[in-house]
Image (cartoon, rainbow, N blue to C red):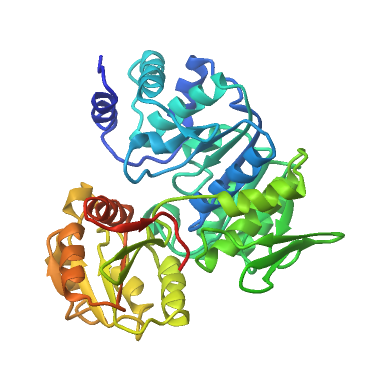
Length: 431
């Protein structure tokens, strides 16, 4: 049997011939053998193309400010696997994860589990034993057939629906929306973060009797000034400080989180909403660093919707100097469509390979070939994100900014590089 956490992670990577296999049959079989009970008194499950991790972070922070004992399960991680399982605001320790993996292995009896399925069962075991008031589960891929859908949520959330993972979820928003809406349960609330969601999401909610709570219809949010915003629904409103996670899209994520908590059968004081919104933290979401007069932003954005949001932010917040983009995509992403969103918003492109990400990685020359007709066609080429970032920093001058994005792999490499430099670090700083 593996002994250390790293031993276990290497082991579970080898327990299924595929990195992804949709379906609940195998993971449910092992969960039954483990005798897993409900992970908390109440459960919120969060699906969506983008914004899942931030929404989880807001729900967690607000609930903890209200005095609840909270567990949060997110993926993927950036710097350490333990980031995926938080209990009462702290990452799980190695010993607890090792024990949970051993329990999954003992019950598995040869049933092949993917890396994510193995980790989900381990997280549910840790939550079950932590006597939680609330568990927040972030869907890994899709929703309907995701391992987190083993658990019946009291409130389901679909943050946004856009094109991503089409090989698994379908070719358009309607098909993708149907998969994500699969986390909803009959006669339970379904919070929908899109102002104009796919009809498939609302159709599924209607078919099972789930009450859809929609942004722009059932709850609303607007910025009031440079420091405050308002969340409101019929006969109730909150005036709140702007999130510390202050990219423009984070206002929507915070609003979705509030709607989810309002839909739960739990008392949340107004002050807890304000403190939680202000205190929520999550690395790699326009996380800001300063280096010799250059502002560096690291973001995990990796699909078309995220690219549009990032490009809109660049255009809305000009700098006196040049904007450099370090882009490292995975091989299964539509890199040309992502880059197209930045037309006119970036002055210099620094392309990076992602072979260090494993089977989904792509060499920089192959990435450049995909971008040969794009605004990044003449971008500088580097073998990995760390090399590309260092080259961009050397070329940038005071007043310039550097944006690193394209994948969690790119964000991880950038964070490790920046933490290794003599930098002024402002974790999760606003733009």
